Length: 483
Image (cartoon, rainbow, N blue to C red; front, side):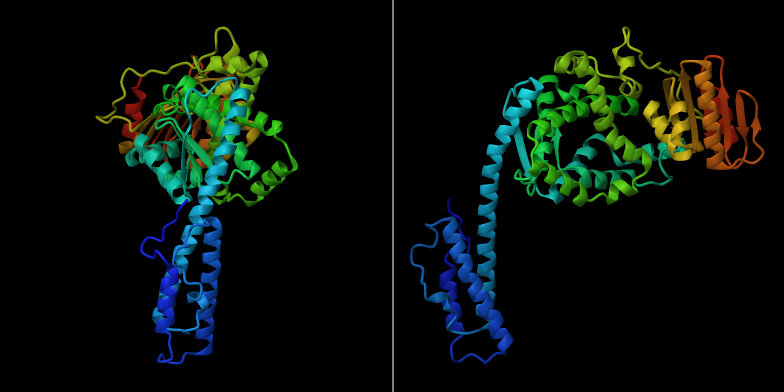
């Protein structure tokens, strides 16, 4: 392998030139300057030797062994030329190291691919397309992928609506923080749109933890080649709950395979690398993120693995494979796999309105919170015990947000009247804590307030709970007409 120096083809010639420039006629320099120059000369000698060790044929012809002695002494031009030559030589060494690392990684990757295919019981239909990027490029790539799916306005609309529900702080910079969060946590990722697997260039597979991560991402490549990940509702914009449920199948499957890979390759070094990784990984963005982002980021992996483990227990990986033809449709099914395995499955109840336009305005957000979202919401504002109890019995929900009236209308449907009552009570507590309403009016099935927000919470005989939350009385009356 040859590593040309581009414009500095033979650094020894420049050393000779530097020596001439530093002849007796040169001005005498301070001892420290002379010493610094000599250090650069010595570094040049070491670098040339290292480059030759990397490629014995390099610089073999016409190289003047005496030119690197630095006998001519210091000169500014000689210092400049030597410094440039050393920088080029270091670049050559780095390039060679990277080439060797990539070659070594290729061998390790092939073995990991073999093991992942054997564990999952699926063969790779085509070679995996690896893309090696530096950390800055990975963050830019992830930002670009998000931009392909969501515009900046859509991010703003999502943030406003989720803030109205109580899931995010008002004015939270969702897009920027989400990219920072992914950039901090992601060690590698698979893109189902380009069918490429992206890895950090400094994520050496000498590290056992990086091999485990690669096993996870290679499972995604297998999923894509066999089931086409783009066919799953992973990016549906009007039902976050369904998207998270589909993600839990995909990530839970990969986490299950990753766990088996780790057990099959368990060693002291793997344990050490895992411990070191847990202590050295930057967690600042995750620790400071709102609860909703934190928990929804890990939900597909942790709860998804539990869900897939249940499927596996019912029929090995064949049962997991079968789920891709009929993916879970709610986080309730992930939290309670028996709802998914039931015959017939307990599917979410779709909520329809005859019209969406209110006061001449269409909603900027039309979405679903789901059982897991409700658990997070009530844990944030109340407590975990109340949250789990209030979210249980969820059968469906849908919310609309209208920025013109700072108006939210949210309908939830429950399995029983008791389930609806538990949600009603928890949501009343949440609204009271969030808005501190003056002179609220309460009955068994209603909760209302007029200031500082207009709040109308109502439980119906159909096991529904409907919330209207707006800054305008006119909007509150208009939203009441939605059916």
